[in-house]
Amino acid sequence: MTRLSRSPDLERLREDGYEVFIHRTGYLVLNNIPYVDSSCVVRRGRLVSELTVEADVTIQPRDHVVMWSGDAPCDRDGNPLRLGGGPAANQLADDLVVDRTFSSKPRPTTTRCSSTWTLRQLGPGSPL
Image 1 (cartoon, one colour):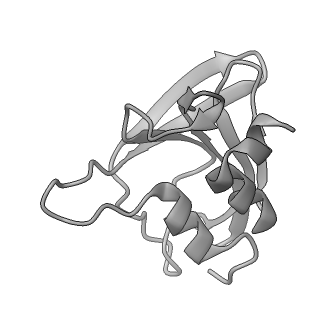
Image 2 (cartoon, helix red, strand yellow):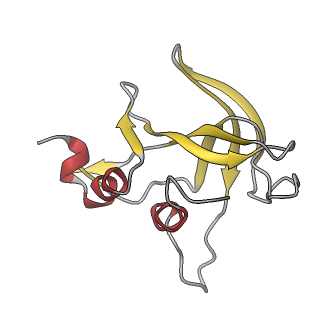
């Protein structure tokens, strides 16, 4: 049994068609996430997040910031999406480089949707 299969949220992402893996540095990585660039071309990016585990099962990360490898995601008209964060090039490992961060700090007065839920709604093959 792998760490992915012991965590229902990660296993669900894999079942939904995402390329999910745990990098040797401990980061959670989702490859080939579709997005639209400023030229309205569909591209593929990489979402990278801190992975926090307890008893080998994922728990809510301490930080609300995720990292992204790729250009700034845009809407269908080529306008950058308002995802918080911004450009933040960082080499996390020799084979793991990110270009920007996304930040959406949950408000205590509202129901918080996890990034897993948002990704499940979009789906790996969803039209943009």
